[in-house]
Amino acid sequence: MAARKQTKIKPKQFLQELKAGEKPAFGYLFLGAEIFFRDRCRKGLKKAVLGDDVTEDGLLLIDLKEQSLTRVLDETRSLSLFASSRLIFVSNAENALPAGRSAKDAPNAAALAAYFQDPTPGVVLAFECTKLDARDRDDKAKLDRVAQFYASVPVIVEMDRLTPGEALKGAALLARNLGLDVDNDTLAELVEMLGGDMARLENELQKLQLYAEPGRPITRADIETLVPEARQSGVFELTDALAHKQRERALRIVDTLHEGGAYWPMQVTLLASLFRQTLAVKEGGARSAKQAMDQLARSGVRTWYSRAQQLVETAEQFSRSDLERALIALYEADRDLRRPTPDDRLIMETLLLRLT
Image (tube, rainbow, N blue to C red; front, side):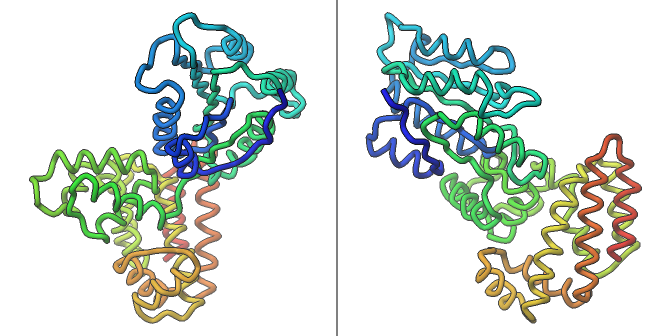
């Protein structure tokens, strides 16, 4: 049997096809770091392949940190007396890649390709590579190698992180489904402090549902009480200080955050997003929050009113050349923070001195 030509789809399309009753492919590669969608695709595939009768023989979980790809292929050829259909989830798929050689020419890749030339009827293989994030410079090259190695797998489901606008829309839908009354600005701040991670957003919104009294609006104080990032990040207070070039205030905030064990790479990422959007607002000539929102929306970036107002105020404080220098400083701080044993506090204080 000839292997199907590989196709690439998004989780939404994948789930729609399964719901419409399309027969699952013999193999999938879940590629990307958004485990919120990975979990839903897992659930949908399990339902499509095994129905409601999930048995130990029908469902198998293999971790390539502990087992080899050879073991996986042996399992695909093993027949079961108790399950007519079998689903094999293979986690940490990147561990099958050979070190120091071309991924697509590796012996294991050839063995995998040979399997998909003649796959076992009734068996569906789902490889998962969810530890690598395409937004990370180092991970991008690794993801390309993973895709090359698994080029024979019929379908890649791309589990990409959402854009800020998509994450906000998804969070609003989650909040609505949970019956939460939370205003758009508060929700947008939660989305940003969690980096648009939909799995974390779902978890934190569920915690807020249990915490808040029915019918009471969710406040910023609720989020600061329950969400670790809100308690220790202080990123919005810090960005406000930077927006107004308040050096002493910014340094005090960094001192407080350092004592609280803040995760500085996340802080720098959020600050870089602020300054990139501020530069866009500056170049577009927006003078009000509404103008900034409309201008960014035309570029495919959705933001909320209070954030847009902050961007306008920052643009008034910084010249275009100041903003360009700030982005260079943020890039260098991000680079230095990711080096072995960085002096986080010194790096952040130096960054603030450069930004103010």
